[in-house]
Length: 221
Image (cartoon, rainbow, N blue to C red; front, side):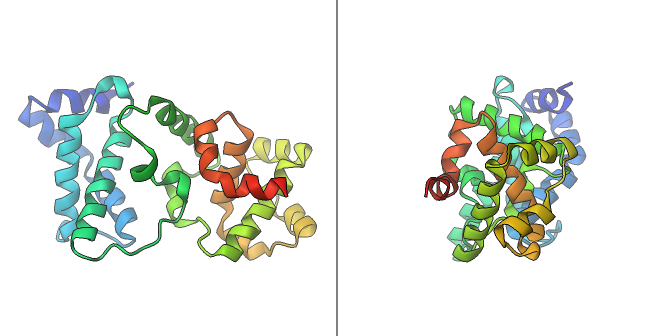
């Protein structure tokens, strides 16, 4: 069941296995680097070289007992690319979601947080998106963040509606618009973020919940 993880372990001492692993994960490397670059990355771009170097580093540092290799590799690629952009004076983009910026919140030995991320990833996949998709749909402007907080707070105070959302895997847009006044366009644009925030606050994710403090603070008002 953990074929890729085992390949990563063997690739440390086996050049053929290492080449095979890179070949099989080429799409993953390009997709990951494209997310961080916020544009389509090809093999002709500098980001590809940085990402390949980071992937190789991930193979060398990976511990099978720490969980998914691809999750670990994605974090290393992100760290290396951020360092690359900063070194070249090109990294000025605001981090879009506090609780998913692993460079800031994930440490090597923080197994509890890793387990929380892995657990919530499975929950979100049932809705048709991944944890990392939140990079592209998170609210940045203060006004938008407040609107999203209002939507999340409404759902958290409506247990029946919340159960229906979790059963149908659909965000109840009509009810939220009607009862909060939040524009439907905002809800649709940030649907994944709203669902993730509700699932994290509803579930047993104490570490991840800490990165949604602004939502909890507004709920207390």
